[in-house]
Amino acid sequence: MAVAQAPEDVKNLFEMYSENGLMNADGLHKFLVEYQKEDETTTDDAQKIIDGSKHLPKNGLHVEDFFRHLFSDTNSPQVSLGVHHDMNAPLSHYFIFTGHNSYLTGNQLNSDCSDVPIINALKRGVRVIELDIWPNSEKDDVHVLHGGTLTAPVTLLKCLSSIKEYAFVSSDFPVVITLEDHLTPDLQAKAANMITETLGDILFTPGPEVFKEFPSVETLKKRIIISTKPPKDYTEAKEDKDKENDSKSDTADDEVAMKKAEPHENKPKQKKAPEYKRLIAIHAGKPKGGLDECLEVDPEKVRRLSLSELELEKAAETHGKQIVRFTQRNMLRVYPKGIRVDSSNYNPMIAWLHGAQMVAFNMQGCDKHLWLMHGMFKANGQCGYVKKPDFLLNTNEIFDPEVKHSEKTILKVTVYLGEGWYYDFDHTHFDSYSPPDFYVKVGIAGVPADKQMTKSKIVEDSWVPSWNQEFEFHLTMPQLALLRIKVHEYDMSKKDDFAGQTCLPVSEIRSGIRAVPLMDKKGDKYNNVKLLMRFEFTNPP
Image (cartoon, one colour):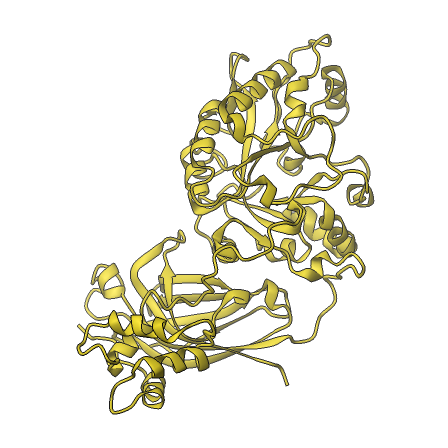
């Protein structure tokens, strides 16, 4: 079994900051401040690193100790500041980790509905849970299911109970429940009772008035918020349905074929459920008319608009600045097009570039776009809320997403080597008779001008591949850029094998030589697989 050897760059740095084959606390401290840009590090911190090394005496590090420190889990590539964004701004000023059809265990057509994917999403840090609520077959209870499909239902009560139990396991910041409502008024009243009784004091109830501005994220800590279309008088709703098939929520405009609302019984004397309406903190709705009406900004109230990925793409072509202006005060939710029955996802960048707060994703999959979502929400202490860049919030000069901007920074990435596959994979997983042939793909996901993907050489027959290659990325919008890293094993006769991936928010990458842990396809961290990499930011010429 081959063991990773320190690259020449690491050996040279050791020589620069050491004396007589040992790097003492002063030398290590100097290295951490000058080279790693860890300005807050003290000599005592450096001594603790030395004290934790395997070799004796404890008066300094040997080159192997120094290399192992750089390749350790404590030498993270990402800023370790916890929640460090300003959390006192309104909800509309943040990108929010958002799920789509959060109750589905698999595809959109015939998988089971369950509270398990909801629990898993909350544990991962998702802050917006979507529930489609329907009458059960007896019309006396509320079920959660994907309407018009063969998905097996789960009760609303079970979903609410699990949300309450797991809402704040990963983060103290608010959880939003978006309801796609297909209920009659009597069942809306029953749902209101379930919500209030199950969630109790953690439910945020705004009262009868619509917000002029959304509350801050900080003031909503440990609270659960309801967002849906306010219920109409039953007769009015029935008339709308006959005219426009408007029994559906605004969140499913291009899914009509998959989610046809069940006909309500004709009870014109039934009244709307006032208890239900009072629970709604974020009012959803799509005004009648075209895009101009949908994107109109009302200075007296805020609301949520939902668009499919295709609707957003079309709107962005003609109304880009209007979308940005709308999202400065109001919420925009973007959801997958209806034909994504396999629970795949779309590129979230166009939505983020236009300020959309709720970019709704199917969390049960394992596609490359979901990796980008995971990468975005590794930022800000993984709390599920990421403050939007200032250029998206500037009310004096509305950002134009169509304008190409000048370079802001250059990111240089060196991929030295990798290890850990020998311990995390079966030894015949990649090749039956020889060690693997690994290569790395490194690139940027971001605005069109920044998007790029490059590939390393293939290192043949090694469980501990050493590439020693540098890549350079010129970025116009580093605030929205994600560094994509993927490792594959080359296979001459069939598709190359997946061997790990990760996405890092460029805004939080630390300079210097870092140990980068890799994830599996679902986004879960491997036990041992990691890369040794170097990151350097420079100003454009």
